[in-house]
Image (cartoon, rainbow, N blue to C red; front, side):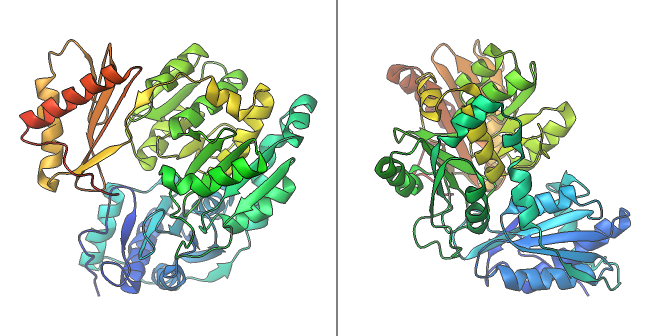
Length: 470
């Protein structure tokens, strides 16, 4: 017995494909057999599995369960919920050695996939390729494991409430006056949000908390401004302090302040950092190469140590473990709290921490957003480049900039900082695209930065063509 995967599904950070075309129950079974075999060989035995609200998720969960138990692994089924609830099940239970969440995250409804954690560490890159190698060879252990169902949501919700206990009386008073909107986008976080908000102080209004894998209201990706229109309207209509939005599986957060302004991922991190550095002075705080210079400056101003790192939730989690950083975040809305939490990306926990940060700092989220410097930046520009060419182009740019007077950072692609601001060019790890971004404090500066990007692309025989969708 062996199995060959479609070459497009085993990716850098997770496994993802199109149901009925590149991904189906046979793939889920093979993933279970490979993952289960690796875990048994590493001395583990028990795997927690959960799934999101997509139509295809229960079918994949059933097959994954069969694959895992056929290797002698025992399975703990935690049912439907956000990805961080599965991470919580893996991190908090003494008897669980690994976890797999079936989720298509923010992809279109016909996609699905798997996010995995192995003995407390992210499972990505070479680990995922190993799943394919083992399946092709049929290198699997045989056994017969047991299956149990564990109701974990109530315990998970209680854990999300813990940051509130740390507030003083004045902070708790401020918390009780907040009025907040929550948009679950018909994703898997909906039921958890419905159980969370009645336990929170203040007044709360929810949108689209019923789970519907067809996403009838808007696509569950809070990093695209058009998907925040319903939340913005709710905040305006009810005169709310701010609004929170969640992606399809609840591991990425978006926000709107009381004036309807978007608070982007790096701006949320500025708020979290200001709060955290009061509690843990001098901490290292990690952000990805796409984040604003304003964030890195602000961390330093508040006595922290800013660390710029590669984009990708698995890479950031690994860097946090290595540096002991209590907080990290990405432009894409993944926020990781190791401070008083487990270090995985949990948008619901991040939502609670935003309420608490505002109350502890004694400033409204709108004021915190208004105090940030007005940077002029481009959205993330993505353009198609042949897969075989994308990393080569970045190497060519690095070579040409070797003796540049500008500050050139090659942590992940090339990020060039000069008097006008900064620009970034990097290769996506998950698609055949190059990603570009630039930021300045003036329109003229931004134009000069964009011209530098275009010059570099032209020298490598490329131009910023039509935007590739993600």
